[in-house]
Length: 114
Length: 114
Image 1 (spheres, rainbow over the protein chains, first blue to last red):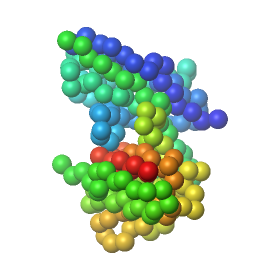
Image 2 (cartoon, rainbow over the protein chains, first blue to last red):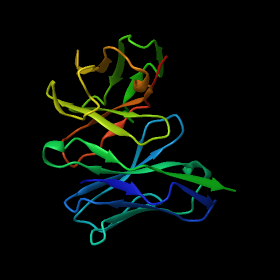
Image 3 (cartoon, each protein chain N blue to C red):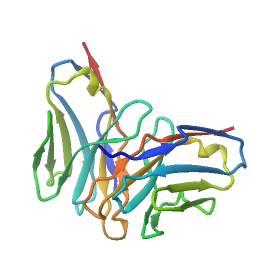
């Protein structure tokens, strides 16, 4: 069935280093993916999205890579800062009658250490 | 920058009581959603809403749940008879288009059922 999952529950990163957060999906027909950041006590905040006709998309200090062959996407954060400490979710957008449904993965806790 | 707002930020209620969670979506958005997140778990889809009717609902969204857009700005989630297991963060989201469009989330309402 359709599923979105994350490889690591916690990622500890030294300030200034790059972070890589991974996500696997199982539905090869999925065509839209979003990364959200959730800080403690707050709602998910949009970071970046990517459509299946792209392999890579860049934003400010963030890059999302999509590998459709192995059904894997990743979020790279350059020069990680203390403010990047949060839980990061990948989400898959539904299709057809489920156009509005976001299916979230379990989340990866990123902890930035000085 | 426009944002989704939610009230109250925290709601405490007794089991069996009715609660109404309120949301003000981004003003030009037409598609509205509710999600919930039980503490320490992933965000789960509840319902999508467009043109004054439910587009899709999950298995969580049973007869105890209802949604309404009572006027041009508010979007509400009602739980008729709360259960202990309804304790969670409830997030409202909105988007401007269906399909491949970003959903923007509110800060959430923490519901505690005693």
